[in-house]
Length: 452
Ligand code: URP
Ligand code: ZN
Ligand code: ZN
Image (cartoon, rainbow, N blue to C red):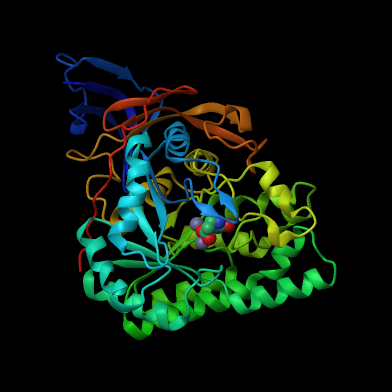
């Protein structure tokens, strides 16, 4: 057999216990106490370390045309960085072109991803155009294993409420899950124009033009459409307190509403937009005030946020600088794919939440909600996507140590207590103590299916 990881503290979403994990041909084949070490090609002593399922980052934008440029990490560098932060599957967003059937969009992007991905990958499709027969092509994508779609309520390609409603209806009929970027586009446009006309051009006005209520109103409207159809809905990058309360209320009423937040909303607050480098933090929705940040942590603790994902969409400094004198010209998005799992695990290591909860948010729930049956747990039969984590290893994030292709990170200087030391992707060691050991093309497309 290929690999025996001995004496680690095995963490799943429900349990923590000391044991050995045996891996063969990319799968976890046995878990137990004192498994016999004979017949293994490799034995790793994990005493005093945690053995965790690899994280599943269900929200990345790799090589994405956006904001007048292309996001800085492609499929290779983005998945290399993922591996080095303990993330063994990424879900990337395909942005559909106008007039493009969904299967063509998948083919177009898989031609880029397949030769480059260093860890496994799945796709969501960002829906732009469902006129005529295009709506029905959602079913073709579902049959091809891409069963989740995002509608944007903002940006120049955002959809109107009627289109959103039709997409929700179609998804319900064919076993797909719709996620939503919820912000009120009219308010964003009006406030942006107003601030620019008043000469208020700094990054702070990115936040001011998309404040708490702009996101909250859209969360509420989106939930309203899901309720009307009794269809599931997944809210991506939830960042505001009122939206959290809307989610909690709908869930208490029995509706299938899922919520995702991101580490940048848990760690920073809107004060970052007052900083000299404030434009580097420009993302949408923007990072909100301290009350919202606290509300997100509270929602995590009481179980009203299901997943943490990154919204990884980095841009280079010179691109962020386009908005030095006009916040509306700053490409929206920040880095995070290498930082999410270490950040959340460090929070657990410091006692803010349990390691099991981090596994639930970053691996188990993403697998369950999005239909990755082979992933999300250290269990016999699952893919051997495994992270060994050293709770004693202190780590300060700095751009030079990251494995992306960007030239700055919002996480610069953030100190973590504990850090992943090894990452295995389907049993293959792809990261070892600071060093990437994987290769382009190793990552496989994850075909998914959701229960209707
Ligand atoms: O600012 C962000 N979030 N950029 C990526 C696109 C999106 O809205 O998710
Ligand atoms: Zn979005
Ligand atoms: Zn995004």
